[in-house]
Length: 517
Image (cartoon, rainbow, N blue to C red; front, side, top):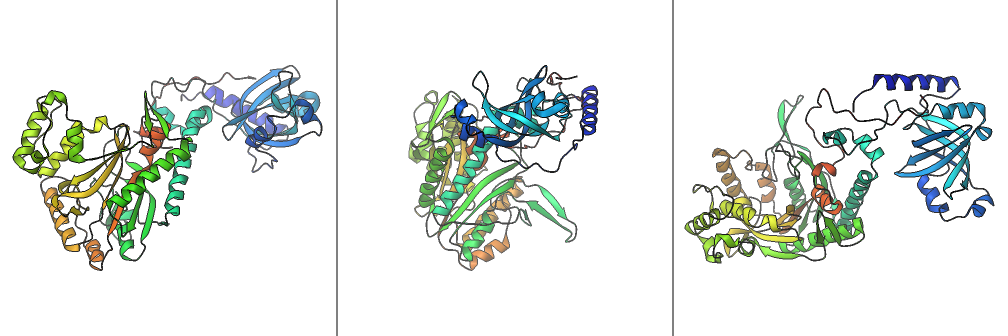
């Protein structure tokens, strides 16, 4: 927003005049009897006669969002909690000093008013003001044109303005709050205990990602901002907490995009004595219930499509590749094609003849190539809530293998709106197997994969004390919120997303006309 020194100085002078009237420039508190929401809820259906007998006295605070002066009287709209209520200020009622104060007010100022409720000739519920108390000055004008900005990042950078002038933005974050509350209720209803685990960790573990590095001066050691709480939560399973969850902030030093923010929120939970099928069922219930709690139903809008959260499908990764195999690529593969390196190589070649090119590296594990083929062939079709299960061992270093197919694991991911929103599996609890998996990841690091998992000796030691069979799952809170609010960039559901440094000359935003200049 362009800084207008003239407007700023004009409003500073008004503030001095307000102080000269005996008002405090920036008051510490204001005792109110009602919120605007309470008044609208309790009195919107009352007639003028009902408001007169008996008279309803109120004291209310809010921000001025519209103001007009008509001789010796005027109207304002006050906003509080995203809702607006009209007030009527008459010189005869507030006195000369009160009316002088009214004439010095600007859009954006905070005031408190006391008076009584009535209905205007047009029938609008209004406060007839008897006293005005000045609370805070808005020295910068609120914008008239906000969503027509060429630099959309300004909305995210100045979220405080975005929330004031755009009720739809406020509603998104109210729904986000409802989402988190719903997740907690479902977890607690199933006997889970909420815990907190370290955000600074000596080893970046629990996921495959590039971490942020920080330094602890006193201990003189580098630490990593957590990429996942998984290994700490599973340590708690070893310690006897059979059902634990954490709503956690994770940090991954990766790219920005419509689905990615370097700092994001996950719900992660672990349950002893069950497997991936058990947590799969619970996660489906968790998400479906969240849709009901946030939106009041199970059908939500996603662009020009609809998502029915009561209508799920389940496919193995291999079944999904077969199901969504493009016709232009020729005959659909057979299940046997996934069982050999030659078969997988032929599938990639066949797919590449009719679709966007998939890189093929014969030195990579076969399972990694199959996972890439799934991403290219199937993900773009997964609008409907879909559980994809049985993932290659090569891309699942913490998952338990299928007993009959060691190249595949008991892992699942949930997709909706063409993006992944959840990841879970039967937890690996064999310490020797876990060591081999970590060693395999170290080899990937040696080959140049700086996102591969590091060795965590203490975690292996924890497993050596005996972890019960368990299933675990993570749910992306930001992405689920995107889907439930029809928000098509993750920055729309994060109050203060990470942005590039502010430009020296941001685009100008037109301010409201000065009312009493």
